[in-house]
Length: 501
Image (tube, rainbow, N blue to C red):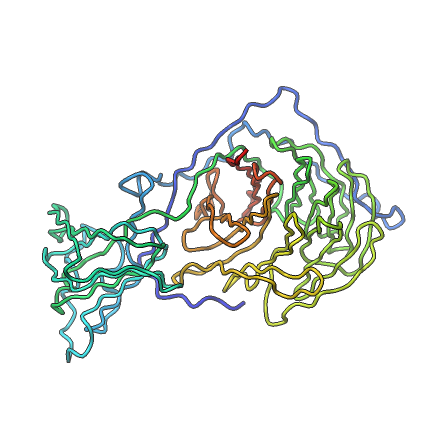
């Protein structure tokens, strides 16, 4: 798969936010799981196929003991403010890279880069260019140096994706000097910024070409745009690596896990049903229709099955089907994304209405409808992810907005879902802020982001995700549910969101 071209990364900081687990009270009477078969025809039913019934999760019980990770207060100096060192630094006049990268480390023997040989000529600018992993709403930079003067000619910050930024010339630069006692550097110089957008690049221009050699680190200080910390309403274990999840209008949550696991939960995390699935099945996607029914796509048998909320089989159709599905709320038609084609079926008569060809040189992931019937998918999800709105009849791209906010890190978007107001929720496995969920309005404006992407495979905390697989949201936007799993651990997490009444 085509990958993003990454700028050389050095000294990457992982941004970790404090996560608080929230347990909820439960009734003493726990609903026992019931079995419902989704076999479409008894004549083709395998004999004695095994069905595993997972134990009923208890949201009030503690999850697997997580490996302790640093809290937000351990990583930053003020609540809500992030400090990050550069991951790439290039000194133009010396044609040298790896200059002033990373955070300031007092244990280093030298302050800056005194080993750099003088340039052969002075044709280049006296310019230090620094790139940062995460775009921030930066309010200052902090320069660790042995030279309290530096003789700066220009300070500029910019977003590498858009080119938008802010600059201050010599007479406009404000420097606050502080003497430090730790390490080889004697001074920390703080320069306030007025960046109008999130930035990930800093340019420092000097009058004296040797001034940059006295700099050990330049830390960017600021806030992560639109970050929120919603309550984790519950997190429950699921018995296998999740494949897909969906929630219907009555608040029933459906989970496909492994090839043959299909379960129902309520919005409080209680398991209600387990479905009997043949061992030959390979569940690939789930979707709820406007009537509360569940559509299950089975790649093993190559068909889709329509089930009532109670688990009664209503219809079976299709042939040689795989991929991801969504149901058009306007007419109830089923859309199946299969590589570079979308197949459209009726769910009542299970007839193929038409097919929609997509761009053959593109890759696609996720499929979702807005309440008004607008169809969305993620184009080039693993190297240049872009949300595109497709005409549900022709597949023509009606609108598009990029999910790439910086060129400094690989960005992979896996799945999307849409609430009753048309807001989009994008699930990532990698991005510049290492935040799992981005909430966008219908015009693509970032409204919120939440949920840390963890790096702890031995046990990741509540509210964080090591290997997220699928996302869904209730129509009122109150519940955002995410399924993730790695190795022998898998979870279903529900966030309780604040919504306007």
